Image 1 (cartoon, rainbow over the protein chains, first blue to last red):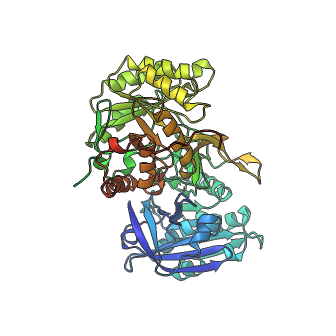
Image 2: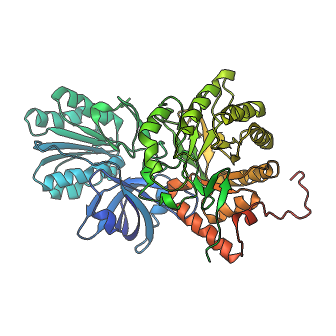
Length: 257
Length: 310
């Protein structure tokens, strides 16, 4: 964990309300792991005051570059959309734990919804590149909010874009994609981010088929490094911090109500 | 020449007036800020028994500030002494432990335990928590309760005792005076300002605890005023806290009457900020030819203006 300066390489509109910023920041690009995040200072002043957490969307250690996908939501992200090439931003990281794939695992199912896709896409991409069968179920309210389809396709993932608009984002549909792959032994682990509803399905399937599955949480944070105890989730062992104990938790350990 | 930034609170000699505010500093920050450079270290408040803390949401951002209702999530003083305190004692800066209790007995038991500990230089009493024995009003909201609690713990230690005062009172100087008379070596103020926020879509309070404490730059002018009032009332050193984001803010508190200052919310935004503030104070002292913090403390020039209605 280090407080670094990143230089903006590009900052582009993706689709719907989604944007992507690419930074040059060797220290973080060479140390961050899938699932980890940084605390991003969106402006110099006191408004917004706190940094914003962003999971790594993609990283390029050789170039020393790192990408964050973000959803235009409030004042902090509105200021982020104004970043231009050459601007410098403070980023603290890498923070939190990372996704792990068990050695015996032959295939994984990765489920992301909305901006939650930004947290899990890299896991699907890396797995596919390492020759692990990787199903990516990308859910959004419309086609524009399903990000990452192209690069996950070219990485060799089995990609399913599902939307509310088309009526394909139902739990029944997700189940019909996953269950045959689980039953035929293609998938041994599931990873989810961005929807508690989807998380509950992952939990249910993991219980039924004895899968070692994980969920990544998104929470409002003040510090990002475990001191303020502000971002908590309920677990079997009481409240845990999303930033420091997580953001990734074994799905059976957490309360998703 | 490097200016003399040393300050003293009872027998605690601080090499500079900068320390963290409780709840905003932890061992997790040891790679981000040099603990040995701080005037003092002050980890998060500890309670007698372990506390789960409040249900989420616990923090939200508000204009130039943040609201929190964490609820002092901690593993209790015995766990703290066995497993955590040693990590802080490895550093050379004086260690001040913030404690919070729900009864006089809890405060006394904690002070006794900390008194035995060589590595502890001082104890800050977080008296903003409800006193369950008297129906839940916090000790710090009543001058008599404040006097009694400080006097009760004073008997059990000669280590420095700092009473942390809540701003959620009519006249903070009465509480400060009561703490001084009870035997406090210093008062720190202000704790967070009780506040709330509502989600207009759901009409529900945003914080799980309904109300929380406001901190950050939004409360700084309120804190400066209260520090100034208290510094005019008591003779013990005052520790200023509330929305300090940089050296200028810290210097403002010192001029108002603070001997030392605490940095809170700013640690979340910039975990190395205390080092910057220390350097900024030194630079100011050189630029303005100030020889010591003592010389700067309470150096406010009010002239002939009278303090009447605004």
